[in-house]
Length: 328
Image 1 (cartoon, rainbow, N blue to C red):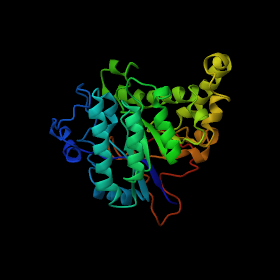
Image 2: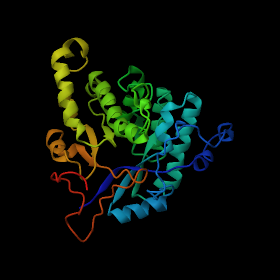
Image 3: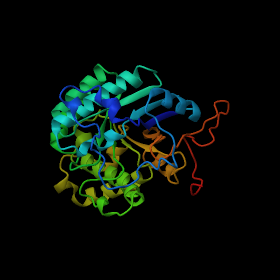
Image 4: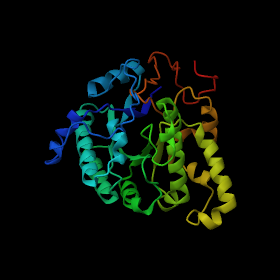
């Protein structure tokens, strides 16, 4: 079985990115004050020792997990949506995208990458998406789930137009801690914030995208919702349908069918972990061709499938997995 990782992470550093920045941006402080100063230990580096700051580390991880290829996402860049300086956000994204081209994409065809887009400036984001895909070889782009925005807003139209024109996917991904006005900042411990942040961020953005009619206006646009598992998707489809039945004619006039129909259209995807309790239900109710595997290697411990290439049945991952009870 060929295993493709739809969401792995590069642990990029400030020192790696700064050399790809233009003057005067490269002269700014190297601390990259993106991660909120809340004191939370996001990495648990004494427990999870893996890092993936270069192509060689990722190629070793692919071999270890028996994976053929990975689509890579940033780590520092997950917090890019909280930057207030638009010019700095654009420069940060351009540097990251060039860094990924130079140090990952060109090293091995097994390493693919999505571009980081500055959502602070949608016009610049559309231009950067075009550069990243056509000149740098990125296979799509990441849209930040967190921050003071909802992705159904009309101002993001240039990004959707360009993605559909280029025929590339857009991946909605959260930072894992701060949603921006959603109450996660009230938690005293990271474990509580991290439990809620990814699914809450995805729920918010899927709701905005569907009810504001983005899948209706851009029927060929492919959107992935990553790192929240797939079990929440059927529940949220049902909830959106219920709301649409009650209020859709008045408050969602831009859509022509039930929200669940858009989700099942074949253009919206969700990542799963291999041993999710509700994976069978997600495969049935969302569509088995719309569920993708994600390792999330390495930030908070790997979820590598551990496939033995000599064994046709992977020990941990199967596309048509059956529920096996709580994770041990």
